Image (cartoon, rainbow over all chains, first blue to last red):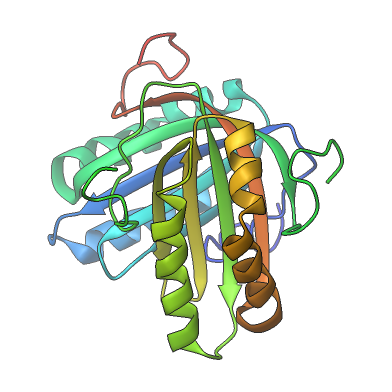
Length: 125
Length: 125
């Protein structure tokens, strides 16, 4: 596990594609900030220990929208993480206590790089 | 164009998959906040007018990491937006003035929904 595995507030160092991204967007209610923050940090730590985990990036803005993108080697790794017992409990609490709304998208990363100018449709990064 | 097309701080309303996501993560330097904010808002507006645009979600955290996810019907739509003249100029300024680092990932969204409990690997949402 890399030293920065629990750091969700920096770029994730991911291998060359293909791999998978879980894009989780949410809006918070105004309740229980402390409990929510503790659970969010715990989930970042726990995710980093799962098989197939590649990295995570997470930001919550002052406007209330949060975006967390976690990266995984395979769809199977995502499914297993989703079924992790402690994670299931966090999901239940999220739905009951903390989130006003949320949306999940599962996407296959096909290209990745630091280009802004090179051809986005080119095969190489 | 929907009324909220320029609102990047809420959930994007996207059609059923498949479609494409551009995950743009960046860290800002501390320079020219005003110029950056104006350009960022302009790009959100401009993106919303491109063919194939589906939506955008954007957050910058207090820690400095920003995550912007834009959604597109096709890879070709992404390539065209990338080559938009005004957008090219914004990209140049971003690289020269505003970003300390950035990373782009292009991903094909395969599943989307509000589930936390239903089977993530199920065919239906």
